[in-house]
Length: 116
Length: 275
Picture 1 (cartoon, rainbow over the protein chains, first blue to last red):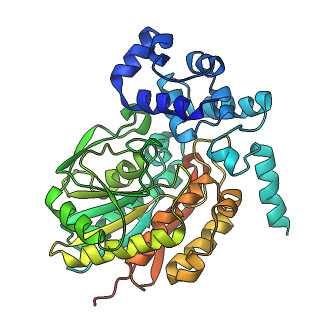
Picture 2: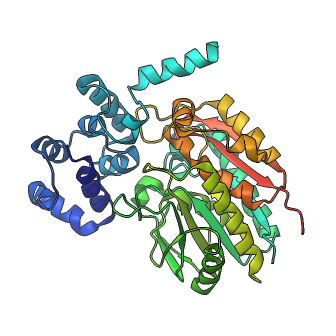
Picture 3: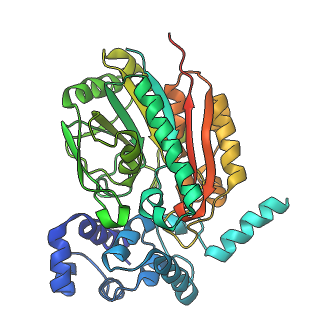
């Protein structure tokens, strides 16, 4: 796991047209400078938005990567939900630190509070 | 010159980027609230607008993440996001390096702050400014509080930062308008996007309007996350504006939950008291 480098790559591609161009031409080559596991490389090259969210990528970075791939907003949200469904709770990062377990659990907690 | 304006507003990218998907009446009401905020700010005849946002990994990343940062340049470009996505055309906003330098120097007497001579505005600054200075003709002093990459500076430090901003603004001859952006409860860019805890928001705004320091600092991040989402961490900018308002009380000019914008859209300001 190297969430830091997954997010570093996304940070760079989000803001640098030259890396966007490199990624369009050769995704593996664009990822080569970053310390990534095979699982992470696969998620970034496919791209698998749901898997990336499951791995812990911050949505503020991920949403721009999705937009770069012409993924519409509603589809982007659904892919993250599907990722949690398929792979389980977020593994690492800000959502895991704060106990993110998925939309359903989060909603239930809020409703429970309202009931009280 | 004492601070001439202190207010807060939302900055969610959906406010411009997904405006076409919103109920037209709701969208127009939100945009009208921003327009009124612009009119109110213009009435104070500011020489510069200091926009304090929670930046989202556009300039600052976890390789070197400042808790507090202030821009110090003569111009700033934006938006860093795709213009078609954010529905804001590329712009160059004027800055004022000399003014920033003097403000930062004063702030450093009491807080540690990073400065940045380059800054690409993301939606945290670009969305509010697209309404508040649509001709991009008012010098901007960008300010960032890290609300995205924990560990985050605790709220009492955001309060101290706001106090430092006020001391700095009061120390220069220019008329400074201060606008904090972000919050309140929201789960931006996650599967929970669109969820808004209105009750939590209204309670927070009540504390904000009363400028009740103890009540405003009585939050911890785990509880905020559970009840207000990771977007709730952005209350730091609102809290800093409260401190900068130096005891003034405030008014909510507009608040309405808009799920397609992923936030309870907010415009509020303090009635500053001349010293």
